Amino acid sequence: MSALFPLTVRAAKTARRGTVLVGPVDLEMSGEGTTVVVGPNGSGKTSLLTLLHGTNRLTAGEITWSLPMEDARAAQAFVFQRPVMLRRSVIDNIAYPLHVQGVSRKQARAQARDWANRVGLGAFLARPARSLSGGEQQKLALARAMIGAPKVLFLDEPCAALDGRATREIEAILTEIRAAGTKLILSTHDLGQARRLADDIIFLLHGKVHEQGTAKGFFAGPQTPEAQAFLRGDIVE
Amino acid sequence: MSDLWGGLGQAFWLIVTFDAGLLEITLRSLQVTLTALVIASFIAFPLAAILAVRRFRWRRGVIAVLNALMGLPPVVVGLFVYVLLSRSGPFGVFGLLFTPTAMIIAQVIIIVPLIASIAHQSLRELWTDYHDLLISMNVSQSQKMRTLLWDARRALLTAALAGFGRGIGEVGAIMIVGGNIDQVTRVLTTAIALETGRGDFALALGLGFVLIALAIAINIAMHALSRTEVEGRW
Image (cartoon, rainbow over all chains, first blue to last red; front, side):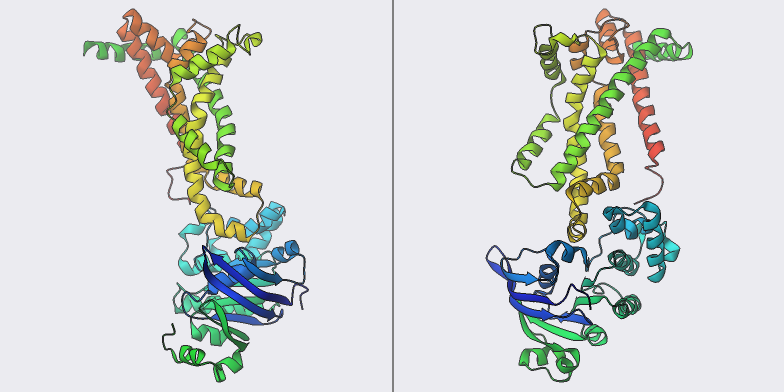
C-alpha cells in the first residue's frame, strides 16, 4: 500500500512529571484496514494516538515510519474528540489545510466544496463553523482532515459526544474513507463501534498494550481475563 | 452650570459655522492620533502574536512589562521623547522637536503597550483553542501568527480602539514634545488645556464636546466598517 507503512514502534513511552501516560509500547502496523484502539478511560488511548502522530513527547523508545519524519507528518491527519473550529466559515475551515500549504484560494475552495458535499455539509458552506451542531462539527473536522489526502487518519473518540444518528453518519463516511485506501487508526470505548469498524484491535490497559490482534480473533476469543471482562461489559480497572 | 450650557452652545456654533480654527486643530488631532495608531498597530499586533505563539526565555517578563507599561504616565513619555529629540539629544539633528512627528512618536510609545497587551490577551485565548489543531497540522510559526491575527481581527479592533481612545484624549506628552504652537502643533486636547488656563471655559468646554463627539464617531464608524455588532459572525 502506501510507502508510509509499515509503522514500527519500539518501547515507545511518554511520561509527564514522572507519571507514565502510555508505554512502553511495541507495535507493528501495516497500511491496510482500520486499527481500533479500545480500552477504558484513562488507559492511554489519546496519549498513544498523539504519540504515534508525533504531537506528544516521546520520552523513550522510537517510532519509525517508512518515510522521513517530515514527509511522514505531512501524510497524517488527526481528528480530535472535541473538534477544533476555526472562527471562519465552514468552507474556509475545510480549505484551511490547503491554504496553509499555499494552494491557491480558488483551488482550495473548490476542493473544500467537494469535501463539504461528501460529508453532507454542502448546504452550510457560508455558515460560521462554530454555529454548527456537534455532529456537523465533527463532519467538518473529518472533511478538513481528509482534504490534504492523508495516508493515515487518526481519530480520537470521534463519536464520543454524538448521538446515534450522527455516529452512524460519521461511521458511513469513515467506511468510505477506508475503502478509498486511507488507513484509519481510531480510539473508542464504544465496543459496538469497534465491532463495526475494526480490522485490527489494540486493547490498551494502564498505558500498556494488553492484547492485540485481528478484530475477528479478539471478539471471538479474547486471550486475557481483562479483555474478556472488558468485552462482557464489566468495569475493568 | 451656566458654563456647561455655554459650552454646549459654543460647541454647536463652532460646528455649524465650520469654524476654520476648530477644523484645523480637529484634523490635526485626528492626523496625529490616527498615524500613531496605524504605526502602533503594526508594532503591537505582531508582538502580541509572537508572545502568544512562541515560547522563549523572557516571554513572561516581556508580558509583565507590557502590562505594567499600559499605565505609562504620558508626561514621563513626553519628557523622555523631549530629551531624545532636543537639540542636544541623540536625535536632535533631525529637528523633530515641536513638530507633529514628535507628537506621533510620543503617542506610539504610549499606546503600543496598551494595544499589545489587550491584543495578546485575546490571541492567547484563541491560541489555547487552536493549539492542538495547528500543532497537529504542523503549521509554521508565521502561519500560526497570521491565522491567529486574522481570526481574532475583531478583538484586535477593540484593542486598536482602546489605543485610539488613549491617544486622542492624551495631553501630557504632546504638550511637552509638541509645544502647543498655534497652527503647527495645537490639537484639541492642548487647546482645551490652554483655554481653561486662560479662563475661557465656554470655549474649552465646546472643544471638549467636539473631542468626545469625535471619539464616539470614530468608534461607531470602525464598528460599522467591520460589522462587529451584526449577529454572531464567529
